[in-house]
Length: 111
Length: 116
Image 1: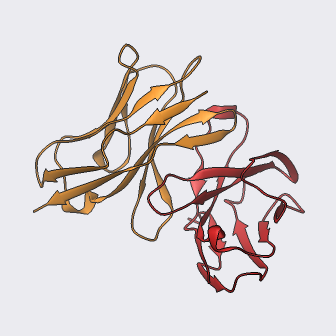
Image 2 (image 1 turned 45 degrees about the vertical axis):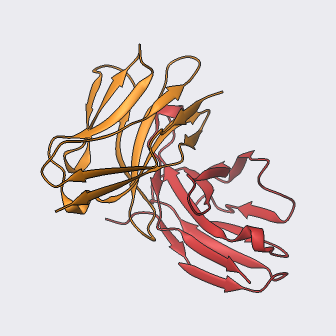
């Protein structure tokens, strides 16, 4: 069955430093992978998705993600973190017509 | 820009009462989804509609839960005889159907339910 795992409950990074939020996947067939961000007491905002093509996907707010088939990973990255990036990040994969989410990773960016 | 809207944003109820939530999707989107998110977890799928047809329901959706999308536009999610375990954030999402599992789902702000 399609699933994703986010191995880190929390990631801490200093403002201005690069950030990485990890996601690994387990799928049969071609994976359709997504990243969403959630701010406190808010819904989920779509950041980016991988369907096919280039392994480096660019998304909203300067985020990008690298699809790595051999490592079954889809890590979210940003070259220079901002305090406003502090939030809860979810990786997800489609299973049929629904999304299956990881448990989420809290990102804290300190000034 | 009108995104997905949900009402109410917050609901406090007593155990045993019925509650109903509403979701208005992005206007041209024909697919609508309901998810439930408990504290510290990722959202879990409940059900989805294509136009007015309810095409899939999760095993999480017990007999006390019912969802409708009568005219293929807004949707309602009703929980009957609420239990404390129903306390969660209920999220609605919509997408423009046609590309199947590649579609991007856009989420509303959620309705936070607290059952006392």
